[in-house]
Image (cartoon, rainbow, N blue to C red; front, side):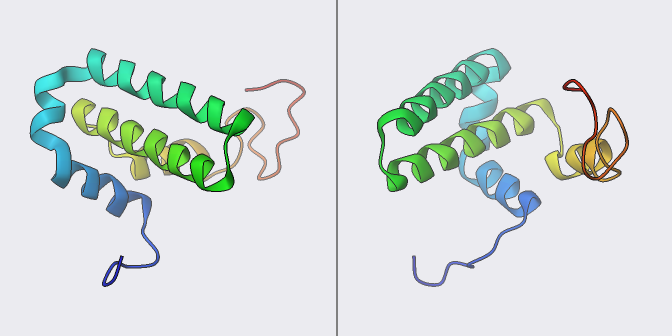
Length: 104
């Protein structure tokens, strides 16, 4: 991947997916896109169980790409959403290192 940046922000990654796939994604719609995301999560589960490190990395990338796709179709800026929910700490206890007894 010559000429590709080595680091990419969450926003840049979401914008890259938008640039590559936005027309097809919007035609497919949220429900069908969500099903693709679920399929990729299943492939990630298989790769975690039986795959090589390279296969796991590819499946993590696919899950991220489909999550970005779904967010784009829904008009969600994941950077803003993530920062809004998690930048101040755990949504349950407010601490940077969670001390909740249960998942918030």
